[in-house]
Amino acid sequence: MGKLRIAQYGCGKMAKYTMRYVYEKGGEIVAAFDVNPEIIGRDIGEIMGGPARGVKVRDAAEADAVLASLKPDACIITTMSLMRDIRDALLVCARNGVDAITTNEEAIFPMNSSPSLTREVDALAKKTGCTISGSGYQDVFWGNLIATLAGAMHKINKIRGSSSYNVEDYGIALAKAHGAGLNLADFEKEIAAADNISPAERQKLIDRGEFLPSYMWNVNGWLAERLGLTVKSQVQKCVPQTHDKELHSETLGMTIPAGYATGMSAVVTTETEEGVTLETECVGKVYAPEEFDRNDWTLYGEPDTQVVINRPSTVELTCATIVNRIPDLINAAPGYVTTDLMPVNRYRTKPLDAYLIR
Image (cartoon, rainbow, N blue to C red):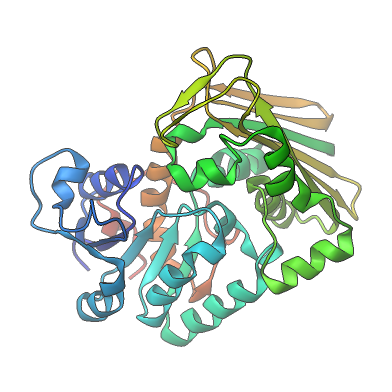
């Protein structure tokens, strides 16, 4: 097949890694898109921090025509965190038969939060013969790693996970989605109140595509599917995180007053027919100087098993996972295919195209 030709949709903080990793894994970027006027027109080499590559960032409005003309082997989407926010990006890829993989957190298992949109993308991708999927940090550190540990246990009663990350690393859309910068009254109204509803009300929101899932909502769905568990009920609760001193946020362009929300903790509890409880928490906030990323999971049963990872390079790990997943994406069946149905992530020692099933 030769060198893989990749399009990049979204050229912010994550793209400088995904694009460089593509080149260093033997592929090339043939098109790039964004909506930010300050980025449009720039050479992608400038964004990556290297030499010019002869590919300039185009307005996302041109993506349809460019993808139809170039027919890249795959597209990497690194923009926003909710499926509804990347609907246009997913559909423009599906419409043009271009395999696409996204860092969008909901996309890891969107059928339990945005089923209608997932079905829409799935149907179009099947019609044009391409594959759409979501991956990133959660694919390995909240998904495959935990499933692998589970395979070493005799019995599991409960899985409890907690992961923290600095919202400064991911851009303004994610920071705002975590309520960073809000006073506590506004946090309660704009963020927390959405979860003070009955299961029936939540299901109506899901059916209408209006539900706001925390990242672990979709991860719990992924884990349950991968472990062969049947979900009986699932709830989430969002709690503000605060700091006793003011914190400056470069991403938000503001100094967050002491006592205001620096972000939030979202706890998702899933009960299953098999009696296994999944209780997972993600803490996303503007960090104080002494804070750092942490990933801490305990599987309770026979025997209890724990894994703790301090200071994971979450951004780089997310981007490397996406790029390493590209061969799996291309090899997968058409439609919306979640990574629990793909092989376990592999380190790619050879150029990406060497791993394609021909």
